[in-house]
Image 1 (cartoon, helix red, strand yellow):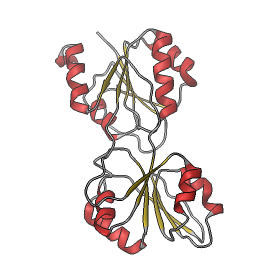
Image 2 (cartoon, rainbow, N blue to C red):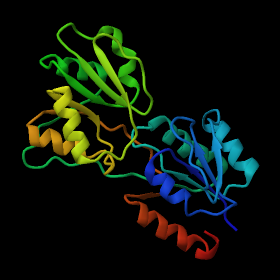
Image 3 (tube, rainbow, N blue to C red):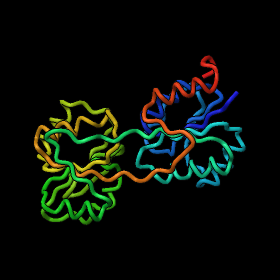
Amino acid sequence: MSRILLLGGVGDALSIARRLGPQDIYSLAGLGKRPADLPCKLRVGGFGGAEGLADFIAATGIDLLLDITHPYAAQISANAARAAELSGVPCWALHRPGWQAGAGDDWREVADWAELSAALAPFKRPFFTLGREPLEHLDSIPDSQFWTLRSLDGHPGNARATVIGARGPFNLADERALFAAGQFDVLISKNSGSSATEPKLQVARELGLPVLLLARPQLPTVEREFSCVEGLWQALQGLRPAEIL
């Protein structure tokens, strides 16, 4: 019987974890909410890099490593690919496609924080949906700007920033109300490709607001790559009988 180690943290990973068996392991880095009532085992915490992950794979008899981490979790994905090489087990990854700009969109890609800071100069009330990274820059907010940040966890913010602790999925009506209350003039986001957080892009489109998108990192090539959850699930069903998944 094959044993799966699933590296997760996003909704796509949880949808697979809820269909695994008691011999399998769902691993979370430790941030965010811990799911309850999983049919598989839950592990929380890091492994100590690629070598530590390879040791864990060997010690627990893992036959397949699944990387369903966030598209911007480049270091974790690199560790997963390297650990698979070291341990001699296959690594499969879900590489969710990014969002694509449509009619009426004003999307501008930036490479890193320095480029983002320069692109933000003309704006007064940016709305950040980058996770925790902007929290490191709260003490350097220009006098001309007021920031609103949204991340999984709340934060006190300061006189020039409000931090919203919230977890998707977000609905369109609530996003419209948030944009109106905050009077945002630019949206900053990662191009996660998630339907759970996509409504903010529609609101930006409706309001004619520019969107600054942090460029996706380069992810390692692994044995098999999938673009959707169901494609990955079908491949898993072919790996072993459906009744033991």
